[in-house]
Image (cartoon, rainbow, N blue to C red; front, side):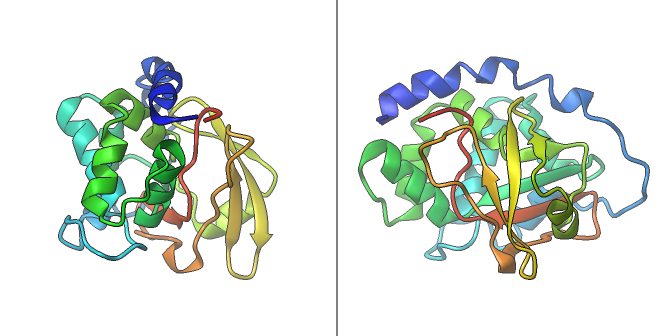
Length: 211
């Protein structure tokens, strides 16, 4: 499905995204309050030539929060709220844009611009599909959830399929049956571990609908 049609389909999901985080269950164990936003912007918050970091994801979060200050995406900057995020690398976003447009953008800035053309509501929906609200799931806990369907802040769910327990690699089966399901990247597990908000890098973007 090309970009124009993808926008129409994904945007229909954005209307119900806002209420999910507010209803997430509270957790009791004390942990640090450093937010994922601080971790994702720790490299200077700029586009670069590193395909394995999170510049495009970071810019997407910032764009949503700027356009919609009340967006539940802003929870990523609230370190007191328990969140687990599966964060696509820059290469993952480039692959998504290529799939939707037929063009591979080598520069991160151009890839981000192409992704942003989907519209803020669509970007918000896709980002929320990568967030598990109310839970701090370390890599070990994710492995324990093998075969489980995990609810996301977007309202849909992903299914955890353990591929390599020794290295902590799991596949996340999303709502698009035709795409390549993302997998966690061993060197990018447990980002921000020790805090209420934890993230794991993934090699493709999760899709909340069949694109």
